[in-house]
Image (cartoon, rainbow, N blue to C red; front, side):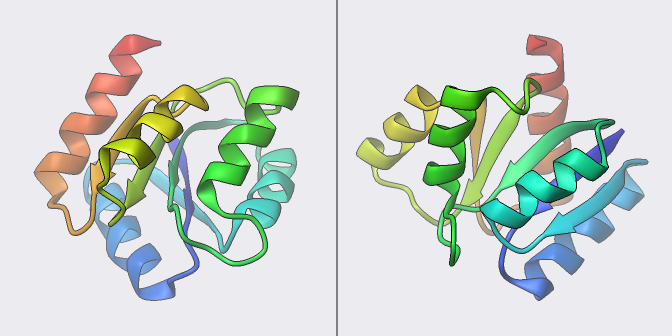
Length: 121
C-alpha cells in the first residue's frame, strides 16, 4: 500500500519510511500540508496519510480542515505527533483524522494503527 508521510522532519520521515518498508508498504514524503496536496495529485493511489501536526506553511490541523471542506483525499488520515492534549486530539478527530499515533512509536504500534484504520474503511 502506498502511504504518504507528511512531516517536516527528514529524520522522522526516514525512520517511519523504514518501518513502513519493513511492513511491506511503499512510503512517499511531503514536507508540509501544501506539498502534500501536490503529492496527492501526482499519486492518486495513496491509500493512507500519516500526518504530523506541527509543520511550516500548512500544519496538520489546517490540512485536515481543508480536506474536510474540499474532500481531495477520502482515505484514512492518521495524526502522527507529539501533541497529546485531549483538546487537540478531539480537534483533529472532529476535522476528519481517523486516529492518532504519538511520537515516538514502534513498528508494532504503527502496524496495529494501519491495520485498524484500514479495517474501518
